[in-house]
Image (cartoon, rainbow, N blue to C red; front, side):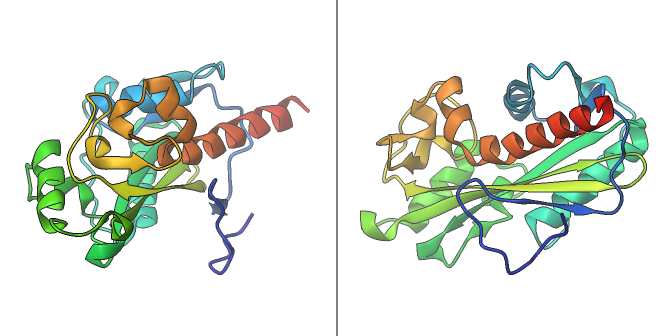
Length: 227
C-alpha cells in the first residue's frame, strides 16, 4: 500500500511501498549490517522462512553506506537500496531511534553515536543517564522506533515500522542484548530489555515488531508467486 503520512500507528506499526516491488520469489536475503549483535538478532527474527539469510560479512566489497538521512526511514531505505544494488540480491536494512520525552526527543536518530563517533554502547547509555539525573520515573518515558526497509535490485522498496514504549531506568540492569537495552524498561514486564532472554526480547521489541511485518511481506510474496 502507499504510505499515508497521516495514518494512525498502533503498537505493531505499519508498512508501505516505495516504487515497484519484485514479483519474484525471494530465495536469498542480505541483512545490511556489519553489527554482529544486530545481525544475529535479525537472522533469528527471519528464521524458518526457507530463505537463505546472508550478512555483509559475505560481501566485503559492499560499500559502507553513510547514514546521513534526517529520519530513520531515510537511512534504512538508503542503505537497503545501496546493498541491493551492490549484491544483486534483495536486502533488508533497519535504523532505530530512541526518543526520550524529557529530553525533547533526543537522542533520536543519533542514538548509536550519542556520546560521539566511536562511542561504545556503555558510553551512550551513561551519557543518557547523566542527562536524566534527577528526573522522576513518571517523566522518564521513552520509545524505540525501528524502521526496516526491504529493497530489491529492481529498485522497489517495502518499508515497515515498529515501536516499543517504555521508561529509562535510573541504573542499568541485565547483561543480555546490546545498545541501550540495560537502561530501557518495558513496564508491562517490569524488566529492562537486557534482563530478557533472546526469545522474550524477540516477542516484544521494536525491531521484532518491524521485522514481523517483513516476515509477512516475504510470506505473502511467496504465496502470490505460488498462486
